[in-house]
Length: 43
Image (cartoon, rainbow, N blue to C red; front, side):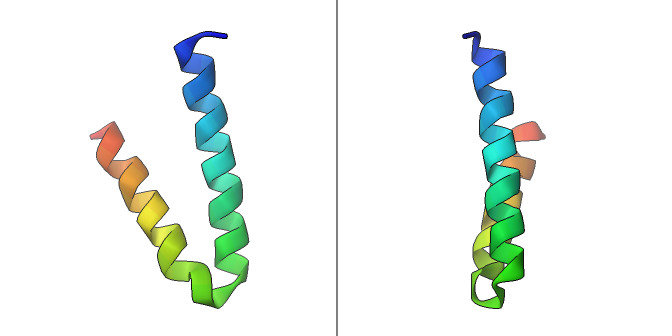
């Protein structure tokens, strides 16, 4: 498996985790943290 595939797979699991966090209000900040981390890696 290439590095690119691994990154895509990790991004997908992060999206799933964010979705799960957003459905649970107490985890909203955790989801935002993950999103911010992702944003920083793409800039």
